[in-house]
Amino acid sequence: MNIDISHIESLLEAKKFDEAKVLMREMVAAPLEDSEESSAITGFAMTYVDLVNAINIQYRDALLHAISDIKKINAAEIGTNEKFRLDGVKKSLKMK
Image (cartoon, rainbow, N blue to C red):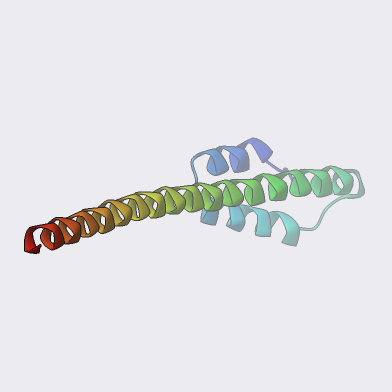
């Protein structure tokens, strides 16, 4: 079996993970000659690690974005609470 690792790598770079998974499944299912087995296992392991890393990077980026949004919401809430607190103080001073 002729394994085209560069094609799988290009799919990963293009974030075409489903297509890369199909190729990797085909790669695993295909019968190998003895001379290809170690090369295939190494290539598969490297590709698998690349795929997992790409997924983890996307997950990390999504978490960082969510954290950033939460910080903005918290800052807006603090600002709003402070405004209401100051408005309450002003009203209480006017009533006296």
